Length: 257
DNA sequence: GGCAAGTTTCCTGGTT
DNA sequence: TAACCAGGAAACTTGC
Image 1 (cartoon, rainbow, N blue to C red):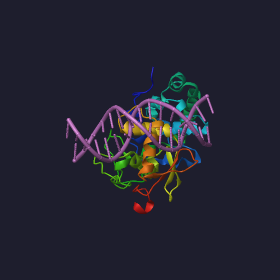
Image 2: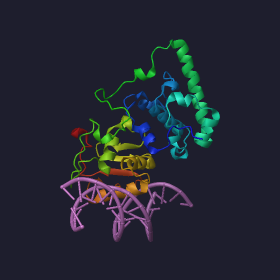
Image 3: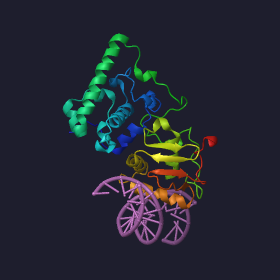
Image 4: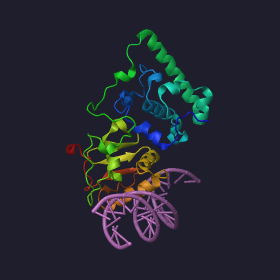
């Protein structure tokens, strides 16, 4: 049995980078480690469900790879309709934790409805950092075409009119933190130093973009290392999962925005 | 079809 | 021991 409407990576990515809620991200400000209790989980988007999962993983220090996120390619309404057994089936030993969390949130949301007299649907309340940006429904977000990111600059040696190179893909994730749910983060923004937080997740995203479901971080990192020679990346010795943009990488500096 | 660029895949060996 | 890093070699994909 699967609680997911689709278990393929496509759906997972739609969840991660999906257009529908690309701007609806109050939750990106999760710095307090709280999701908006005002936002009833019934109204969550797929993206928000995914973020909630990430937060649970973080809070309980559970390895994100220990549950199949694609099993949660569902929106808040569907999530709330899952039974305890459904959670067990979908997330194994993590299921009870998820069930407990969502139950609490449902009660919390119900309480807010009662006292708040259905003030407004949370989805309508989301601020959008990119008000001019909209994505056609059903289209997977491609960070390389986001207006905030400089147009994917041609690679130093040859332009690729079709799309993004790996380093541009990485750069564009970094430049769009609201769509970067803890995958990669800047270590030193001014120096161009960044670190992979979820290396395998990034690899899967890259694999999705290249239509290659067997992509792994091992392979991705090999491609990254080829950039050293071309000075698109520089080595950062002694630090795992840490890379630095080199002199031939374009478009990552704030001054270049 | 040939070529080049940019990966992708596999591998061995070293480091953390 | 696992995960990651480094880099060689060959194969593959794509555009020209």
